[in-house]
Each structure stands twice: as structure tokens, then as C-alpha cells.
Length: 357
Image (cartoon, rainbow, N blue to C red; front, side, top):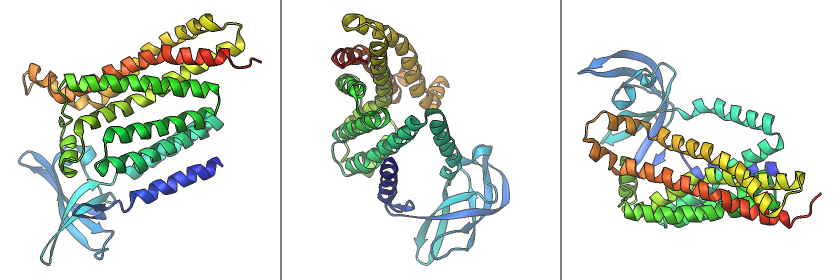
């Protein structure tokens, strides 16, 4: 049954993606580098002159000479070698065809790590590992097949994300941990903490005057959808998604602690609650630190840019990019902290009313 679910999710996700080389008004063709004709510096900027063979379209097999430079060729990781696969953008003017290297094909290089993750999960987690893979696949499918299409079509991004997040929660908790009272406690605790995160994030976005247009990517989304996407609500949706994984982790850990203590000792009621809460306090510090490092790790280039001092520090630290990152860390951390007593209370209530072995 599990195999059928995973296979169905994979097929649906692939079918939903459509042609990966299709864009709005853009024709993209795959190709590969045949040889490097020349390489050097042009006015201080590195460049390569390449012979690239087309691997798609009606002109398959044709070789064209192209220049590769700009921000993606600034260091050796951006240099191309014979055999490297690239994506070419085709533009036409009359009967003249012009090709430009748009991007390097990078995703296939990550497949060994995907396989390694699957092997590690199955080897260490056994059936729990298989279930976690199924949960991961289903979670990704929910966002690809439900949330993204809804946001792209102009629907409320926050509502779509909340509905999708609840779906992800149900799958992640019940598929991985089974349908039992421990899972119910973890699910209810996560949902309660998620509501708190959403309320606090909404207040923070309003008070901090967050427009959702603080980055180039956000501006492209706004322009590309002709202003149909409510950008502040998209920021709220991002905070919800960014907090979700840590909240689930915390809630499952607390629920497991309560039921384990209940099954292996004679404590119950207030004593059970306080014992599990002590474990949660230890978990809080490490998980909040992990969450902050994850957020700031993603914003590291921006932090380095601020440190270079191209703008006055007062301007840089008040920029929307920095403020939004700090806000996300603070709100998610508050949600994590409050998730501990909430989930512990729910799990204690259910454990005291469940039959003991």
C-alpha cells in the first residue's frame, strides 16, 4: 500500500510539472559543451568562448559558438568544461537565430545525495525511514500540486499555504508516526503553535511595515503575476512554512516523551507534565539555535554585504530583507517555545486517559 501511495505521488508530481523547458515567451533548448575555444579576462571580467552542441529542437546536432560570462562565471565553479550540460535561450529575428547560455544543468549532480539520503533513512530508521520518505514525498507533492498552483493563479497565498500546511502536517505526523494518541497530541500541539505563529507574524508584518517587495525575487513575482499576489500575505505564508518543520519536531518530541514516561513509570497528571516539560526545556535551546542558524545561513551573503559598508549601517539593518529575516526567526522561536507547554499539556491529558500496559 505504501509503495502505491509513493508511486502515485511521484507520478502526479512529475505530470504536474509539465515540460521543464517551457516558459512564458521563452524557448529553451538543452545542449552540451563540445570544447572550450578561448578563456580569459575582458575588462577585468572572466569569460569563456565555447562550442556548444544542441541536444534538442529541430536543430539537434548543430554546433554554435557562444560566450559565457557574467555573474555565474566569476570563479572556477562557474567555468564550463567539455561535456557540461547547459540550457540555451533561443531568440529569433526574422530567419536569424540567436542562442544565449541561460544556465548550467545542475540538478542531476544532486541525485547521488538523494540516493544517499534514502539509503541512510532506510538503514537507520528501517520502516520509520521508509515512512519518512513517503511523508517527505507527499509533503513536497502537496506544495507542488496544491499550494503553488493556487498562489500562481492569484488566490490568497496565505490561505492556500495554511490549507497545504495542514495537509502536510497530517501526512507527516500520521504516515511517519502512525495513527495513535501520541500522533494526535503532536498534531494538535503543532496546529495550536502554528496559529500563534500566524497571529504574531501578522502583527509583526503590520508593525514593521513589511511590503513583501524587499528582494528582487519578490519583485519578479509581483510583476510576473501582474500584481495578483498579495505580497505581505506571501511573507506570512513563508513564515508559516519556515516554522512548520521545527514545530512538528518539537511537538512529536514532547508527545513521545510524555507517552514514554507514562508507559515506563507510575507518574501521571501534574508530575507527568512537569517531568516532560523538563525534557522540553532542554530541547528548546538547541532547536531555537538550530532554527536561527538555518535562517541566517540562508541570508549569509546578505549579511556579508551589509558588513562591507556600502550603505550606512543604520540603513542596512533597517532594510526589509534584514528585518524580515530577523522577524521570521523571532516569531518561529516564540512558536517553538510555546509549543512545548501546549503539546505537553495535550499529551498528558491523553496519556492519563489511555489504557496502560
